[in-house]
Image 1 (cartoon, helix red, strand yellow):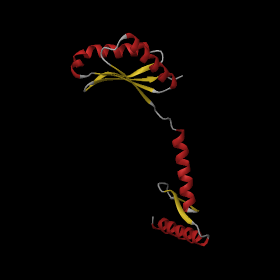
Image 2 (tube, one colour; image 1 turned 90 degrees about the vertical axis):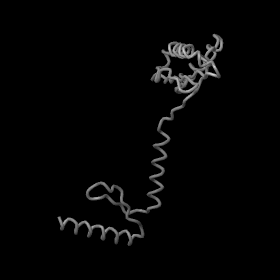
Image 3 (cartoon, one colour; image 1 turned 30 degrees about the vertical axis):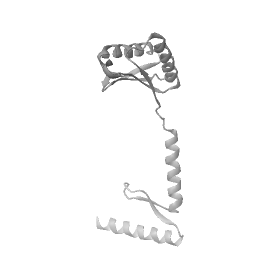
Image 4 (cartoon, one colour; image 1 turned 135 degrees about the vertical axis):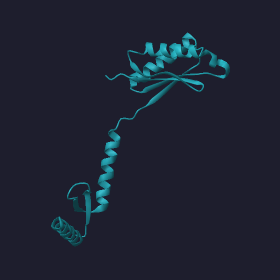
Length: 151
């Protein structure tokens, strides 16, 4: 065991001397590997390349867009159809939909109407999206999430 440690220290000293001679840095690439992987290169350039790689990965990641549609407990038919068309457009664009019924003042008495409204919306949009979360009452809001179906 002792011989391996001495050889490892010798290699590190040799690598440091070589890096110093080339006026570059000894950069540890993979610290968890045995033995640790190091490279002789310019540290600032290494950081720049690493940031560039991370930025490229970040730009490829999908961004989840959430669009909201607000109803009242006594939303009439025309209003409902108008908002449903917007919901269809949002789901076709690939955005998640957060539909909620907002209860003002004493309209909280009509919880059932709000739930029926949201379930009706879910049923009307079932060909475009699937319900991620069923209607749930949170304070004065009853919320439901619908995510778009994959193409």
